[in-house]
Length: 300
Length: 300
Image (cartoon, rainbow over all chains, first blue to last red; front, side, top):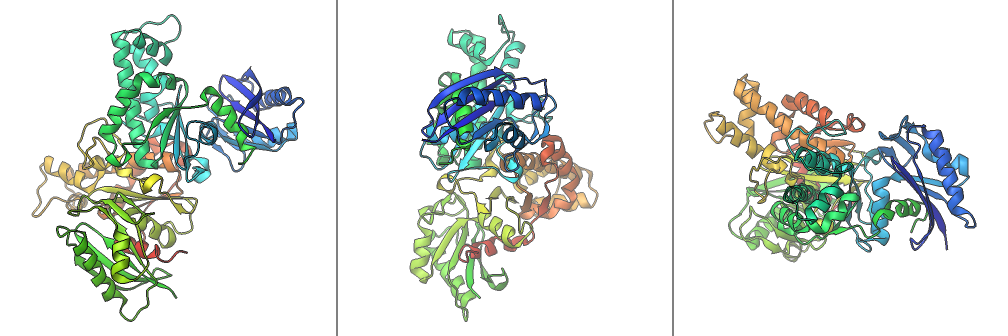
C-alpha cells in the first residue's frame, strides 16, 4: 500500500504524519513553527519531520497544506502573513531539493476539504463545502468531485466575503468580511467588549464553556455567533450549492450548542430548495489538514 | 455548418433565434410571454417561434434559457415565480414531444454566461463570472472551462448572498441580499424614496440619465449603486477567482458612469491578489441569453 507524508504548516505548529491510502495515520510528529526564522529554516524543520515520520517506511511523496494565498500549480506560497519573510516562496522546489521526494502544495483549507471529502464527513458526495472557523475563516470547495481552484488558486476565500455594511476592520484590509464577524477571534473580541472575564486569553472555547455553564452573557454571545455563522452558511448554499457543509476548526467544537440558531438563520435566509442541506462537524477533527496534505501525494 | 434554435424565456418576453456555430444570428423572432396562461400555452408559443425561425433551415436542436431554480440534468423547471403555475414543469420533455427536436435546458444567466464566455467579452478565458443586473441579480459561473452547476444546478444564485445586516426584504424571502441592495429595482426604489420624479416608471435607466444630465440626487444614487455593485463584485472575486467579471442586464448600460466608484470599492475590499481582474460590460448585449441558449444544442 502506498504511503505519503502530509505536512500541515500552521502559524504556531508544524505537523507531519505518514498516511496510507486508507487515510490511516501510521506515525506523526510536530514542532513549534519557526515562524520568525524565514523560509529556509522552516524547510529544514519540514525535512527533519519528514525523516522522523518516514523511518522504516517508503513514502511516495510529500503533500504540504499551507496558509495562502498560494499558487498550487507552480508550488509557490505567494504570501503567508503569519510567517515572517514569506513572499513568493518556491516551497515545492525547496522541499523537493532538500528531501528528494516529489512534493505537492495546496491551500490548508483545501487540503482539509480533500480529507473530509475523501475520508471524513462528506465521503461519497460530489459537491461539498468545507469551512474552517478558528482565528480566521477559510474554505475548501469540492464541485463535481474536484477541488475548486479558480484563477491562480485564489477561489474559496470565503472568509472575505462582505456580509455586513457595518465597517468592522478585517485582517485582510477590508471591512465587514464574514471572518471579521464570525471567526473565533471576532467572538473573543465581542466577549471582551461584553465584559466577560477569563483567567487566560478570551477564546471562543472559553465563551462556549461559560455558555454551557449557564452564563447569560456568554449564551447571548454564542447565539449571536451562531447567527453570524448561519448568514455565511446560507451564502455558501446559494453560491456553491453543496450537498453538505462541513465545519472544522476550533469553533466547530461548539457546533452542537449553536445548531438550533444556525438552522433557524439558514431557514430564514436560504431559499427552500437549499433547506435540506446538512451542516456537519468535520469527521477527522484536527487531523483533517495533515491527512488531506498527504492525500495530495496519493491521487485516488 | 450546424444550426440550433435558442429560446430565451423571460417573464415578459419570449425570444427565439436561429444561430450557427459561430454565434451568428440567422433569424430571430419574439412574442409577449403568455405568463398567466400556464406551461402548455407557453410550450405552444415556443413551438410557433421555433417554426418561425427555422423555416428553410435544418436545426439540430433547441436550447432554452429559463428563469430558475431548475434542474438542467432532468430538464425540469422547479419553480419560475414570474410565470403562473410553473412548478416542476418537465419543459424539455414537453418541447421535444411538441417539436421532435432534441431540447436542452439551462438557467438563463448560465446560458448568457456560456455565450459571453464562448463568443463575447470573456472569450478564451478559463474562469469567468457573468452577472446580470436588471430587475433582479443573477449569475453564471465558468470554472476550468465548464459551467458551475453544483447540486441540482442550484449554484451561482449570487443575487441572494447576504451583503448587509440591514434587513431589506428580498424577493427570495430573505433579507439583505445583494439583489435587494443593488438590482435595478432596488435603485428605482431608492430613487423614489429620494423624491426623484419620472414621467413613467422610475427605472435604473431614468436615474442613470438624470445623473448623466447632472442631477445631484441622481448622481448620489448612482454612486451608491456603484458601491453596492462593487461590494458584490469583490465578494465574487474572493469566492470564484475569475479572470474577468462580465456584467450584463439593463443596469450594465450605466457601467461606464459607475466604473470609477466600482473600482474604488473593489480596491478597498478585495485582497491585492485580485486587484487586476477586469470588470467588463457584456459583449453580446441583450442577445447573450438567446445565443447562449442555442449553444446548449451546439456543444463546442
